[in-house]
Length: 255
Image 1: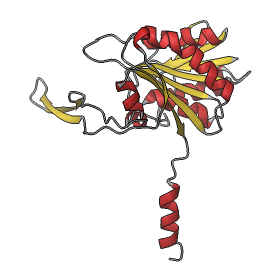
Image 2 (image 1 turned 120 degrees about the horizontal axis):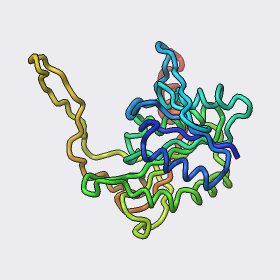
Image 3 (image 1 turned 90 degrees about the vertical axis):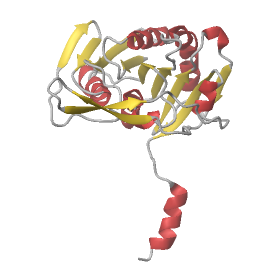
Image 4 (image 1 turned 180 degrees about the horizontal axis):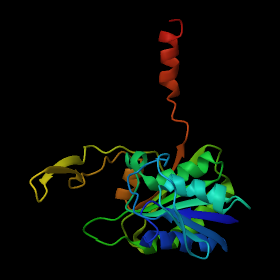
């Protein structure tokens, strides 16, 4: 099995090395193609106005001056043009990608692009908090290989990716695995911080206030993580809301 590993935290991120370790537990044909710099929050963006700079940094390891989407395209269409990957693993992200995070996440976007290219794709993220300071990578390392094997054995449907989040706890504290829906937080977390540079000119940062307690509705990814459970969420590329589509067709179909 040929595996393409990417991420959004960049080629030097610790989580990328963890993802490569997980991939090597599954196969000896592992290729790493990751962004040259941190691309967190770029979502499924594609570089169309700038050239892609490709740098080989070791055997089967490449850095791309671009987004996670660019990396998967570069890996599948150029670097591995002699044989496309059988699996895309994106991550392991430092911090979970649950709830609304999936719409912003470059980690999830790497798996989205793999899915668009008809390659089974899985996003991996390790939750952590300011209190713990360091992600519990041992949790991901212990559980990820077996979970990936089991998901692949079942088979990922066409146009579906799998988003796996590991809880912020040690391996022995994990309560189990939950197959979940995408959750939604109970309060907005973003804010704009206004500052001034050395010349007095204003500039701004998108800031994140203290993380609010997530909605605890059972069955969501946020609930699972809060309960120290591994969350596995299948996500569809097709975002059509069919019930509302049907209603609109009834109202507007004859217009």
